[in-house]
Image (cartoon, rainbow, N blue to C red; front, side, top):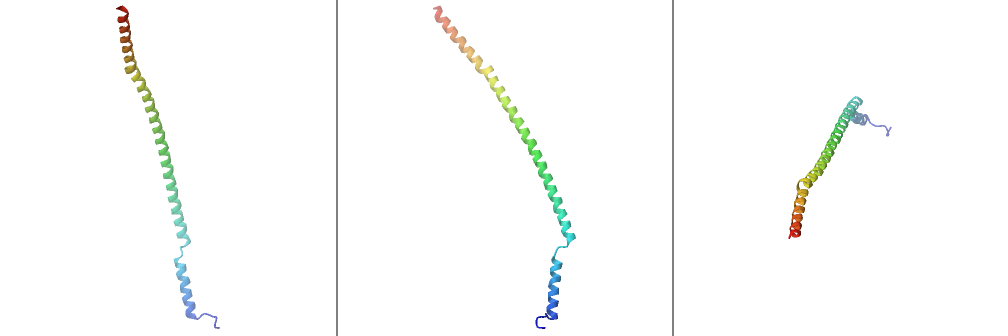
Length: 106
């Protein structure tokens, strides 16, 4: 009988087991917590998908803006050639022709 626990020791062990069981999460609480976590994860995934869509749209808009700016730059370059450089070259050519004709006439 020396190996048998005393009634006081059994009472202490039962109290420890009871405290351990009360500290454990009950299955219903765990299930409810898990559902909440799943719902939050789904909301976050939906938010991430929305952000990805909006970023994709913004990138498309940015690319279109860059293409328009590139086209305008080309147009501006052509305008500069036609309105600035080409007339200047024609004026210089006219002056050179007048000088040449003046030298030929004398």
